[in-house]
Length: 378
Image 1 (cartoon, rainbow, N blue to C red):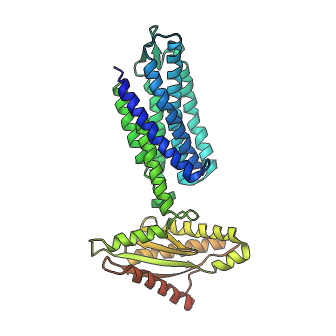
Image 2: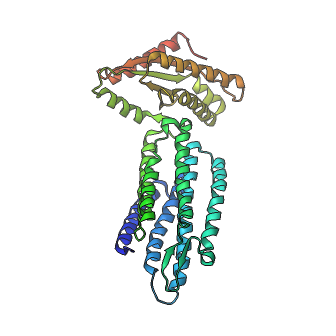
Image 3: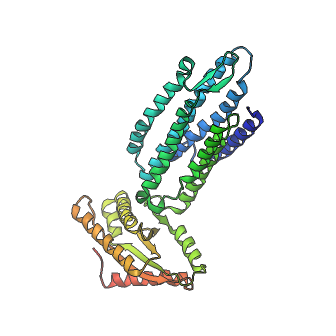
């Protein structure tokens, strides 16, 4: 039994929620933005449209005015196809968040576009074969056995594929990729499962709206804590993290910190330009991130200064520094860049009873001791 009041209420709530996010996105990014913002915007636009369309197809069902049956057929065809299209953008979004590579996103778009096209053809053929749904002579919509699950299963496949891709590739973005994919997938799957087994209610789009809201809020949090050039945490995250640690009740806990300063970074900027300087920073940050991912995290503290933070032993951090040094040597030997990378560092530990300023100052002074004695890792 169709519960039109519930459908209107749920879809109106989803529409309003998405409208608020869309207005906020436009305020923050204008009409454009990076590809991830554009893909998220496509999902928002289509879901807002579907909120209206979902209400329409439920309302027109059983109506007797001229053209109602044709509208019921056409409306449900569009409804099923657009549902799959909304979910189609999720794997593309997650791929870009992982790799930042538009070419990889294009390949994913082609691969994911094939089943979407097949599903669309299947749905469009419903008036001929009734394989997904039918509309009776008296304009009553009905699902065709369990075949209606075929296009809905595609949505689930897209949502799960994009989510699995995120968690399977965490090593590429590490803990620096803050947006939790489960914020997106759980509300959608729960809404769809309930709707599959309870025809006459609509929870899909409020589920999508909640999922998009979770993703958008987490990406906003990401932009606040991630250095946009280097892809590691920024100074704000470091300050908040140290503040929380120093207020911890786990007094026996120890934190190891290493401040790192790139050697001769100014000469790279002066001799090769700031674009090359940015390239050097990004390469260096990636080396830090790759070697710290399993034991802690890296922070761009400012300019060419980075901080490594770990709750593991000093020996573990020293081992990571050795790996970083070896990887830097390999990069320098490759001759792929016009510059040579090197760094100096200072390391110390802190407990929750320690002073955060002393922690930073000790690291800093030990780094300058290394510089002054020219014990520079190359």
